[in-house]
Picture 1: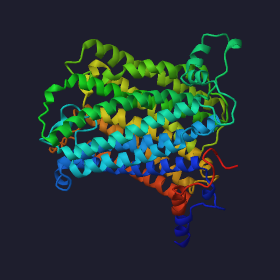
Picture 2 (picture 1 turned 45 degrees about the horizontal axis):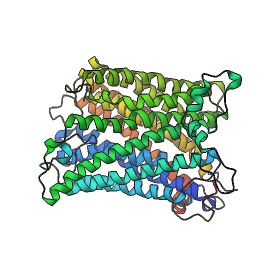
Picture 3 (picture 1 turned 120 degrees about the horizontal axis):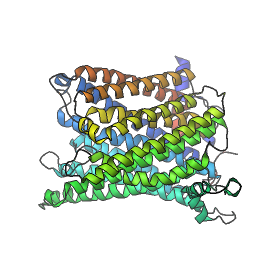
Picture 4 (picture 1 turned 45 degrees about the vertical axis):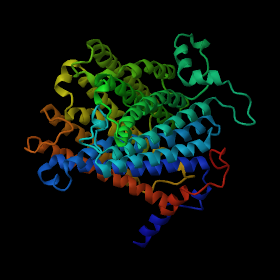
Length: 545
């Protein structure tokens, strides 16, 4: 017991390693710690919802319906912005500096982005929790401004929290492009324009049309190119979500001030198209591009190769994905009768199907790169990397199925959408990829600390993989039987599926706890406190010398 308490307090700390971290290392670790906490929020909220759906007649007495829908609103947003965005921002700040071998531009601004996203997520989560503001994360008009269901003050703070997150996102984008293109003090002048073109995938696309001997050298590493290209979608998404938030805020504040603003002044279908064009940049643009770039980074770090297989194709895909991510949104509206048929066919079905090619090629390139470097050591990062690839293989296929206009009539707004597609994509595809990054970069970020328990990483892997796929599968089965999402059933017709999904969710909770305690026992309570202390090293320094 004494040894355990000592490890809990001190972790694997040796010779003041964590006290010798650079400002950039500490900043990245702060993002990681906050992401870990918010992921816990999302897991607990998800488990509460699973239990309510498994036994609604008993549990809705403890957690009433209005609280359930407030949780349902906060859960995906905390998962997207609190857990995922936070970890991605921190990891990419470090990756940019590390791969480009130059200081991060605007370090103070990066710190601001940390505090803005940390506070913003807490504000909208807490506001929704206290006020029961539950217009769901889609914010379909006129629900966010329905003052018969929701109070205006709770909604106002909810939207202001989202706004803080969007400001943090815009700061992140500015830092990404400035870091790529600027010339650090004392350096030889860097060609900002050509660096930018290379970062957006132009050089990769051009090389496909050149003879081998005439192909030009890429000025930025492939993972950096993916970060830059995904950041374009982050910026556009932030703009649309901010505009939507301002629109909602006008109605909320107007109601507080006594103005009678009519909901009918806003066209609901136009609103949905605008909203999904922006929000889908997270799901189909940002996530797929950032994930692909992370796959390439992991493949290079795990294998030690300098270039991935078919690198020019990989770079060209980053640029071509612009066409897909900017025109794919209508698959969310295939069942809206008022949506124009051509948008349903072209954007909703055909463009969506093209993602099978873009993401499929990214998966293929990653696997072939790994295959070419075999034999590989069966490390935690490799296991989670392969789990992430499997997750997207399953989730993208499910997404293509539900984007068929005929199948969408059956599957739309059912548990299938959030099960085999959304949760498998996020929990298995995205989250396991990010876990692989954490396990791989942890020694680099902590000056050589090794994970406390390799056995716990195995428990984490299998519980998360089986729990995530299992929950997605059981939710999908319920959806095929006709169970709608965002609906509580009291007659028990879907109880068996929801009980099984809840058991799978319990496995995910155990996976998170194994991950949480493994990291805490690695770094220690003192180490976590040290992470939030100012570094004594200059902010321009990437790693200790």
